[in-house]
Amino acid sequence: MQSMSQGQGRPAWGPLLATALPPLLAYNLTPSATLFNQLLALGAWGAALLLWPVASGGPSLRGGGAAMRAAVLALLLLLGSALLSPWLNDLPMSLAWQAGALLVAALLVLQYGARVGPGWSGPAPSLWAGFCWGLLAAGLLSLLIGVIQVFAPQLADGNLIARSGIAGRAVGNLRQPNHLASLLMWACVAAVWLSAAGQLGRRSRPWLLPVLLFALVFGVVLSASRTGMLGVVLLALWGLLDRRLPRAERWALMATPLMLALSWAVLSGWSHASGQAFGAESRLAEGAGSPSRLAILANAWTLLKMHPWTGVGWGEFNLAWTMTPFPDRPVAFFDHTHNIVMQLLVELGWPLGLLVLGLLTWVLFAAWLGSRRAPGGELALMRRCAFMVVLMIGLHSLLEYPLWYAYFLLPTLFALGVCLAPERAPAPRPAVGAGLLRMGGVLMLTGSALAVWDYLRVVDIYMPPAKAASLESRIERGQGSVFFATQADYAAATTWIPGPLALEAAQRTAHNLIDVRLMMAWAKSLNASGDVERARYVVARLREFRSKQGEEWLLECEALREAGLRDLPFQCEPAARDFGYREMR
Image (tube, rainbow, N blue to C red; front, top):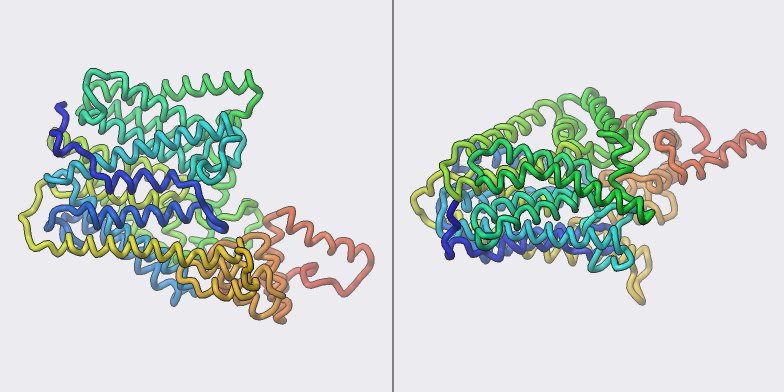
């Protein structure tokens, strides 16, 4: 395969920075560990839309092929569900604005990717080259970070290099092993395209791609991610089945399972010789599936059977699951089912959930079909590699929820847009579409900057500066946040004196994520407000989590019973009735 011409092959900096920078940011401020990564992704993609424009004309929100219209419709249905949830489900507006902003950005980046696809010339190939170089850079630098986290953890300062909270496992600066593994798999796909397109240098370096793939697969073993190991199998299948790939790239891909085995042997030998932890061995001992994730899927299925038509509501899974009796529930707190299919069904219900999933399935099938039918050449390879980017994160989405993070969602939608681009560029027409993308880029760029300022109002609650105002004043200021008010509500619910005001804050923040501390404070505020039965119902749900903190709080009940006291505190008596989760919000 001949390499691209020099003009077309020069990578554009916009997509390169948008894919490379967000996963590499380690700096964070409490209470969110990865919010700045997400806002950086939104801002960087906004800058790409604004400063690296694409040709006018082409697909639009209403135009494009049938598959593109299906993708847009699916995103619009999700957007509508998110924005209507405050009225239908009492979801706090701040959470609706978060989801809405992310979905609007996804729509814009999808359109941007569609203008970079096979039907376009001019700047299009350079934008895709920048995208791939960004993925490869993010993967290689994240690999370096992972090596430090495992072999020299004392060098991780938490600001430039994140500290791993799991002994013997790399987590990258995203602080999550599966996120690191998916990033490394994306980097493998990008390396294949860059190699096949002659972007890695002279063709006299056939060793370079295998070396890159081995390094990235080594990083997957460092992460001990079972999802990442499945991704390695997917890479090998790609090499085996895609006969239009150049021979060198096919052989390199098919060798990735051997690279995985060799990496495992090297790390296992190092672990046994040094006495250091090797996270992958302990993960293998757990088996192929996670018991807690299988349990949460079973609980979600029960909720779906209880609410088949409308689901529990957008953004309501955690509240509905926590406030529904499940004696066999997993003891960890889950705000997601860890499976995109079940998540959409349980929150949207069968009718709307199946409609959205049907549209997405059609879109994926069309993307796969387009990648197979695309005529030979570099642009056809671009479409097939773009499909592999989507497929890799789709695999991850069956086991977790990476698409709820901007640094995964936006690159995925860009690649999907490339897959769904027309085979031939349409006739030029007034640059309305390109102008809208630039306007969208401005909104994404400025919106992400404003969101940082908005978030700092909440940070002041948890990390007060010198001569800070009172905690109550900081909480009240944080409750005025556009996007993060529920974080301030959490502080109010858990620090204010139990009563009506703390109860209102607890009910609002319960739509975000419920934990032991919040459940205890919530129950106390319900009791202080005179709603003893609901307070006892919350305590009954708390007992199901079997947490040490909750059990310590309830220890006094046994002591008081043994002392013969009849008038026991509210938490020591069972609830007289069950409540639906809608009655608790």
